[in-house]
View 1: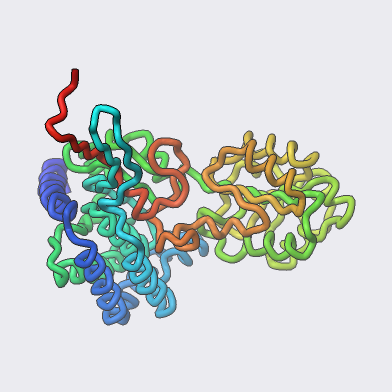
View 2: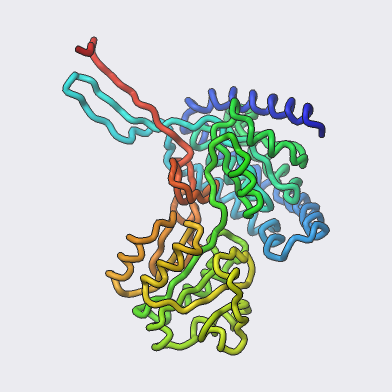
Length: 420
């Protein structure tokens, strides 16, 4: 596709999205609920077609040389399609954020002022290999009264197209515009550049993918961006950790799914914990098939690979974890400040004061105590789903659900009130 053709396509899609957003801004909660339930039903009814489309994508991904972890993110089966359906239903049942009164107050002048949630407008979502993002992003944007323009990765093209058709079917059946949820109908990379420059059509861009994609979006976008560059998540085992809790959480944080942004990438062990329990956490990871890259005393454990400096601050997205001994919670905090990406960090401790210090002195979007970092997910936070994790400090932070896809406006009521 040449530049003029991609510009024309962006103009057509952008104009349609703007028109749809104007309608969605005042669409009733009932119609949006019906659209998402209809989409869920359509996804389940089309599961055989979606799985067949996904088979084409899996073949493309293998030919492209995707890693096993990335192929796992791409793969769909009946259980995962059921998960997509359940997520759509869960978002449908969330409270409608549009029109919610955030706060209100009266002024001595006689004015009554309300701050009320309102849609952002048009959201652009650029994502890589996870086809379920097509449903999650479409659902959350629609729930928040936004139109959405989706640009899926080349490797998930067929899966995303099949799921998108179901999303449109649900919207149209509920009397909402088909352009409420649009999918860029080409693999052409120039459409990514077009979206990043489309300030007249798109109000915010949300990238979902690896460091390369997110870095590109953050560098090149003229549209505001909600994003995290990397999910370099740490888990710290404190001297006062409960051993059995720690053993369960560490293995789950690394191995449940290695290819997601909430997977633990670095294990920090307090020297006090090491003195009490030795290498038990490291051994558990080794026994689970994880390649542990450690330094110091950890590197002396049989089966551990000696860590290179670049292993700390690395997002592996694989069965690999970096490991280091630290001097107490302050040592863990110092390490995370140096190597973290402000995504998710967990502390394992029974000491309330230590946990409070960890929570107070770190500024990652999500901080956890005695829980797996794999809970860094909007669905697990009760949001029904998420469009991504935001690690910036402007507007949205942490899991971006429907509520985070709204802005607000002020409604001011007087009674012939004049300013003196």
